[in-house]
Length: 354
Ligand code: NAD
Ligand code: TYD
Image 1 (cartoon, rainbow, N blue to C red):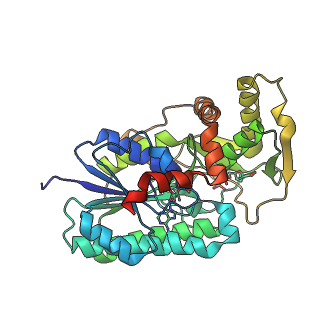
Image 2: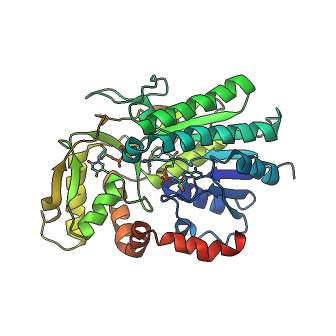
Image 3: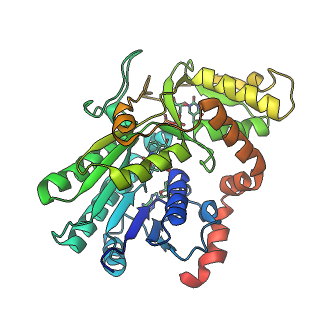
């Protein structure tokens, strides 16, 4: 029993979390994997339908802002490793409702840190609190330069400020109480199961239904894009081999100006939908800019590449093509998440567990 691992993954019903949960459930049959998620609009258990019957998979419907429920779960299930992904994750929503981001991303993280401290009581052998963060905490780059692990934090949006704050608390619990932690900061993810409010799935969905593609400002904003399964693999590697108290930057070495990315997406969509070249591009519409829009993000992923031998497994063109195919094959998923129907699935599937 001493080697028994009870791994808590928070936010496992979301986009990145579901890929991480699947990888862990499949790779680690000997460990118990607990997916803790409150199922907000972004959390969808259908993302995990293919692994929900695995013996080592368990779902806990808990809100991380509920300190008592979080503590109780740690007491009951004796987690010894935590991978924390649960968060409010969309910048535009953080502009309209910043307090929700403070509650989940800051207070929710604190509740988890405190519950880990309460359970582990200073015995940190074989324990880990692995916090999943974003490159957005570093703020905006100009035309040149890259974010490294030592770049000073300089968040600009309520989302990135709340993530920066949670990173600081994780580090503070490490320094003050000795809590064993690792933090990784990743660039923009794309891939299957991403909620269609983020750029790529939103635009795929709009092209399918012939709606306008709202490009913010002049479209010259730059992001570094990483295929979600490559992020999940990096998380697994860091979980197994990462150095305690370290930060790892994860990125695709794959910068795209939004407008160039959108044009590539349009081109691939035209080919897949057998439409004349240029059809989807006609949907591009320049709209009012996002307030405080960060000009450019770009990750220097040399550390994880050199120390843990990690690099992305697909090119952007390949990853984008896989992503589009997934959305075209899963139009029902899209309809359910946009209509809120996926909540019915939870009610039907888990009503006896309530
Ligand atoms: P997501 O919005 O798709 O999923 C978030 C999940 O957290 C959902 O399942 C939601 O139900 C759950 N959740 C939200 N509030 C909760 C609460 N109070 N209690 C319990 N569960 C709650 O997000 P994502 O894109 O998968 O991002 C996951 C993590 O990775 C986040 O911490 C995010 O900051 C980080 N990250 C995301 C990206 C990206 O490009 N998406 C890049 C780098 C880092
Ligand atoms: P997004 O997917 O929201 O990720 P983030 O803001 O975390 O980088 O947006 C990616 C980029 O695309 C960002 O520069 C904003 C831009 N964008 C648009 O131009 N139009 C849109 O409708 C959305 C959602 C984003």
